[in-house]
Amino acid sequence: MSEKIPIYIVFFHNIIMKKLITAASLLLTAGIASAHMGEEAARFYFFDIFLYGIAALIVLSLLAIHYRGSMTKTEKKAVFILYVVITAAITLYMAGGTVYLNLTSATGGPVHWHADFEIWICGEKLSIIESEGFENKVGETQLHHHNDLRIHVEGVLQHMDEASVGEFFRSIGGEFTEDELTVPLADKSVRTWRNGDRCPDGKPGKIRFFINGKENFDFGKYIIAPYPDVPPGDFLNITFATER
Image (cartoon, rainbow, N blue to C red; front, side, top):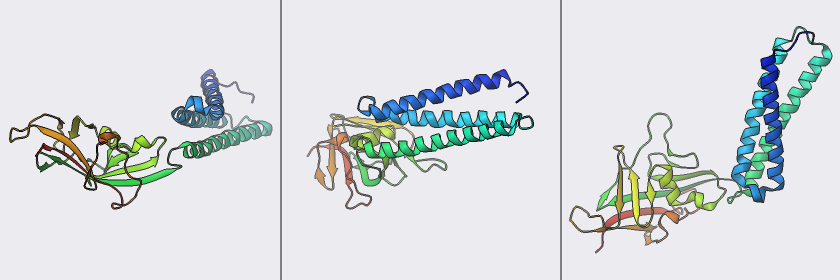
């Protein structure tokens, strides 16, 4: 190239390439010492490489466009090869990252499980928070409901407790333990009930948890059964009521 490269393009190109090399090095370290690093860190570096790789391709494209009229055949070939190498590196790392996360996950790959549930407070069934707009989902990508009183577990689980009932409640803005039940309601309010709080009849209530009609004492720690259909998937009944 006979024309001088603008300093700002060189500056951003150098920063991006350094970040890309750093992310790649850390990812390789993660592959070698994943037991020390953990899946979450590896997942971060896969995403890091993707972002910096795309940024490097954008800078490279801008350089090629800016100097397309003054580049020699050798320079054009070098830019093309660099473009292909970066693209291939991104693709390989993303593909490798997906395989790595699947192999190291507790579920051995993506899942799609369901569990139906109801919440009863002092004899009345609660109407919980519903989605708005086009998203049609309350909660997170991995754990949510679709206004259907059904817990949806979707994706790759690195740990089985990510499919617990307590994690579901936290994903929708609530809490569920043996001592406390916090639920975001359809009217956008959030209510909390604790053991000993009184029902309208003046008697103290208690939180209880039933799975397919049988009482369970794991409460929020309970991990949803791995079934896509209900039944055989779980039917969960959470109650706060006075003891008989």
